[in-house]
Length: 385
Image (cartoon, rainbow, N blue to C red):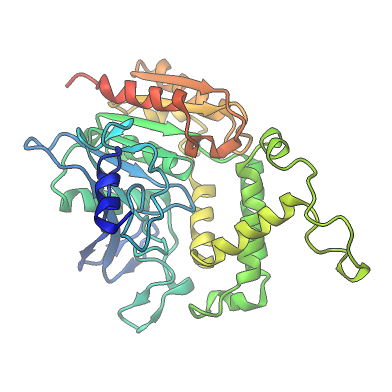
């Protein structure tokens, strides 16, 4: 198959096809919720589909911790790796780009083109590293709102996200209720459990304990690779489920006999898988971004100091769908369900659905006809204007 035939096949197969990222740059200082600021804001994003004449068909997709702006499509003939939710986004797919204008951006604080700890501070000519201001989920959403302004989007048809993206979705409907008509939050929660905080801090300590972290002051080619790899390995375990791991790996071995000197070398297939996940993560992610993102998630708390979720949700005007997954022990179903229960007590339009899947927290990223149907049906029946 030659290049033109491949492009034609992609365009005809329900794919968004070849895509390009863009950068939104706001040269005014961006002030964080902490009060600190950076000289300018840069947000990398991709769009799919077309904004209609009335500007009311826009959907914002918010990515999870290890995700980015590359949600669908491919970059070129030599880079055919599709976006992280490619099976969900495209013409005729549940998030249908023949009907909707879809936007996905790399969060502020990220390391895939948006300004973050690994970016160059124009005031110093050096990487920000830990000079980057403390980050909140609110900061992520405020930066996204500026991007929406830049794109001419006043009101979003929907905001959709899973995990960290789900927390951004909840932040959108409570911070900017007048700008969101519908939302879908998947595998998320109104705040972290103590167990989730514990896992995150253990990952942060793996990074901080790596001598190459150097109090956060490292160069692009000399960061705490080992610490970040271990943090990713441990986090990845929390994204899966016991049943899913057993089905996929069991106790399958790569090496049955080995010399005594290799007693602690990779023996089981699951060990090999996790080490691969750790190394591949190091090749594309910044350790300080990992620290900033996980801390922002741990501090996110819609319950507030009075431990009252209804106070935060009382301003919500959008119609919502919240989806929990039975095998998700990182963001358990009860945390998703509690959001909808609070909304229903307030008389809000909200639906909770729980899907039985064996893939743990990552279930929202897996191809699933049940999930496809849920999202398609919800978007096809929008809230009344």
